[in-house]
Image 1 (tube, rainbow, N blue to C red):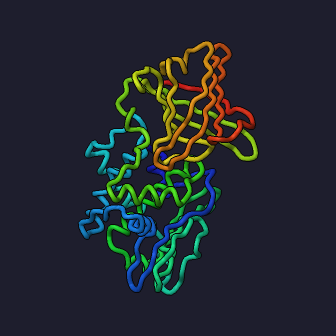
Image 2 (image 1 turned 180 degrees about the vertical axis):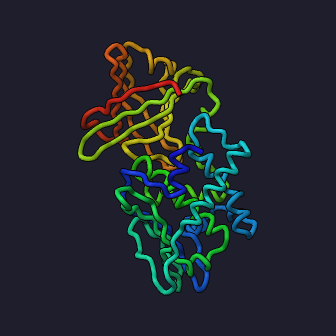
Length: 322
């Protein structure tokens, strides 16, 4: 497990994150269902597999969650790696703060809410916040234990991993939309395609990683991994984004630059490309303008949402072999 994720799960101080984010449920009578899984049920996704036991379900779904965003070179199937991840998750759970009985969490305004059957209501089961403690920022999780106890084990596990993904993203950049996280959790738990971020290039012999920064109305970061690929019979370089416009991505977001190798990102005297970036899970697209002038040691990148005209300055950065 990478050090950033481990620090996150164990509640160590991390700077540069902001407040907001929580786990919602749907309460009907004395049963609470995680909203992620409830929404999957509404659109007809297969029922999530469950053993009926929290610990067993937690271990069953962990590899899927880890694989979703594991960086190239990660050895997620190694038994010792899985053991360390399980320990980290339990370490996180041991630090959850339960509200005194009778108290309720403030409802967070971070999600699009679906329609509910008569007699049901939305409830806030958990909230994660960032608090400053002795000059450091700590991520804390507050839980409504009464509502938690009304959830089936698979819903509890879904909530754990919903929060895990949210925290991972907040350490590095802006968190994804709550709607996106719920959508991905619903599909992952139902065994549907979630487009793991980097698995197509996990075992490539050469990986190039690039970082770009831009100062503006707010600080923005871009980051991607690149490796040799063949698309429609054409050799080139696949670019897999890790962070796009300051947002940590939770599903594959990719473009393809034909006719170049990853070495071109490191050594090319002059490279200019304009390609389409797509996120198949969320059906979103962008245009990437990418320029390299290694002689001047300049790399520049500009991302524009699909259908819009490019505006603003380029982010500048550099690339290195991973």
